[in-house]
Image 1 (cartoon, rainbow, N blue to C red):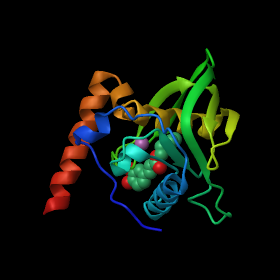
Image 2 (tube, rainbow, N blue to C red):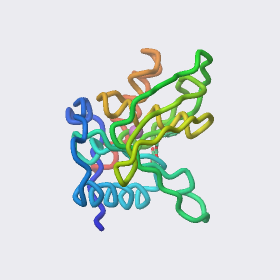
Image 3 (cartoon, protein in one colour):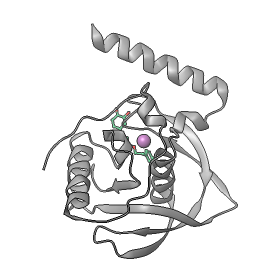
Image 4 (cartoon, rainbow, N blue to C red):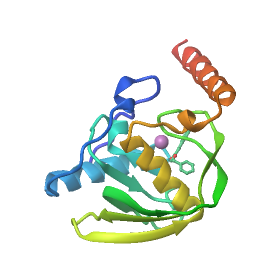
Length: 172
Ligand code: QAP
Ligand code: CO
């Protein structure tokens, strides 16, 4: 397995729309293994392939990744929402591609998603809470959308200023 470089904003690749995976092979699984290892190393809970520069509709997640509990990875290939609840709820989000920036984002509270798993088997998952937030956040990456794009303009400008300042300081 390998730890890969995570692209960070600003980077035009993060705005690319990802293409469906047409065949799930050992190569697909190797990429997902590397994504998971990269995510764990960065102490994240979710990562989309585009964040490591691969424009394919693949997501890895592990909500236990930051605790001492056993790893419990989830793999989503070609996810599609079958249902999004009317009711929305705010959740404080961050992103490995927007380091150091955290903001409340409003999203549907409950979702049902159809996808292919690690072995290419069709699955359906209904989620709420952090799991529902994370799937929607990661799905946005497949469409080239970052969580800061969903913020009101004033908050978005502040988030970008904060990010630029951090990156400026990191170069010194
Ligand atoms: C998306 O985000 C998410 O700024 C996954 O310095 C976030 O794994 C879904 C991270 C919140 C639901 C709720 C961010 C790590 C990790 C940072 C992440 C950082 C180090 C973000
Ligand atoms: Co993200």
